[in-house]
Length: 407
Image (cartoon, rainbow, N blue to C red):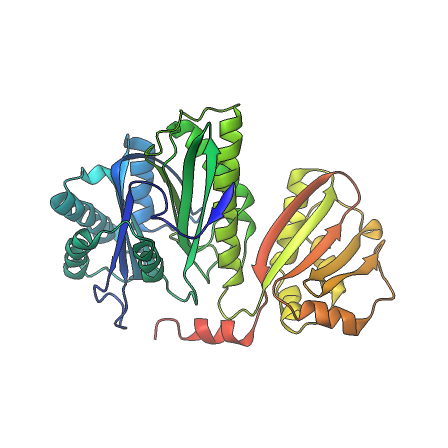
């Protein structure tokens, strides 16, 4: 696998565009479009929140019922969530507008929105934006970057990842972009993620692969414990690389799985590391648990602990909060044999051995915790199964950002 610079326009046959439609109060691009030259097979995963946005409903129908997808339209500023029948009608109008300007069947058009819940999208601006986007489509890396910027809300940086892999002598590329900084919690976060690839793979295999990888990437991140209404991951494969069909149980499948896993995992870490108001990415590794579910539950419990997140912000090696979070996770383990370490580029330090504090240096611990990212390692010593979760520290600015989000 070869890591490359790029995002959604890295794979063959994909173009993108961005435009300022005036949905936000600021004069910044707030709409984006992704288009494939040829029809794509598409896989998707969506929010588990019972309150889900109109575009989530629309996309589920496209992913599960349509034979292919051709384009994605995304807006930021307004989420089109909790908008009733009018929100559904807005999705229909958006897809019809794409059909009008690009000729695609509206049932092959995917939609995504992010922003304030409860507001209706201004259809005149949305339809006008779609017309402008269609005329600006470009295959360049800059077009992909502009699209990644246009979908940001409280994000501080745009988020893109790309790589390629050799499949039986053919270079296959996977690229993606995402947005998300707040209302982030498993399962899925307030995040939109779009992956493009020129791989040739069956829809069933792509969906199986996507669901599995999302479970170990986006479903293992948390910023604030709130599960959003709009969470969407879409993976579009157009086969433009002309590689052989990727089949399960083959080396090609394993290679492509690795590439897709890399892109999704790195994007999920970018979201966790850009949590609203945060100063660092906080990674929690649980080692040597008895079973997968135990490892995952323990890691998630620590990464979502507000007291632990606050301690990370204060560079305080308050390991008792970590052990406490392990204890209330509901997972079965023996706290009297657990070892805990802190690790960063400043070094690695064992702070707990067999459930009790070691004679560690607080000064050294503070140095380690002052770097970005910071990792807490919890060795359960009861098996051979590991899991990793990602989050961030909890700061004063998180409260400030969310106290006046709508204003």
